[in-house]
Image (tube, rainbow, N blue to C red; front, side):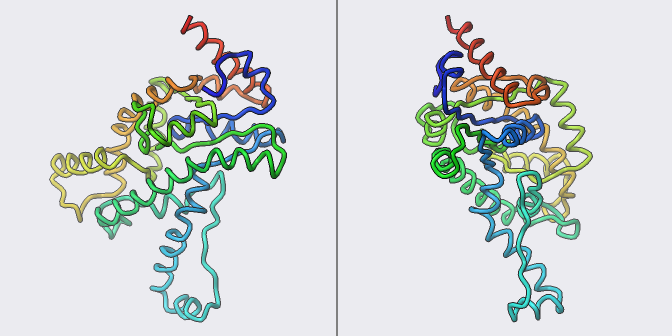
Length: 290
């Protein structure tokens, strides 16, 4: 690990962490607090994916839809208007909208194989964005003078690496350049995430084998044809299974770092609070291994 003890963390003049866990448990919340302190650089994996690695896919998809409107088509064909996404750290809608949901096209769904192509684009983009972490950590210090660095990873980080393989190239690179911090929720958090998702189901990235099995199982269970699947119904059905699928993968990743609870993260109000939280997590890890 980058910091082997509480004392190493407290003495470090430059602190680098990567936050991981399910979306909705506080990664971006605490990253925003750290950024606002003025001494932490906030590197968002989802923002990097949506701007650097999938930005062209996103804008081309918007242009494709605009080309179906005669008024907009004429303006686009004469380079009279510009169409792009306004993605931000706190608004990733352009990315999730492009990723989409499979099913009935009349309900906004995608053909399943087209959906899988977009899933693969996301997987590649996420791997590249994660491998950019160390470069951005150096860049944030050398260019802007930030002494500290927080990588705000996506909930699907555990799907694009092999957390059981210490030689996994992405996991190895992240472990060498940052302290991995798992924000772990309990059963109550899981129930709340599921309720929240049911109210507003959104596109997600899933590990391909898991996703193909989920699609097959859903079709078998409902008797729907691929073209008649309600996109929202499918992603709602899949979400709880995805949480269960990811939990042991997060736990395996946490062996290379430290674990903090979602409740403890929710209580963080300042950069100093976060500093103390990580120090205690490292101290707890030391006690558990001695």
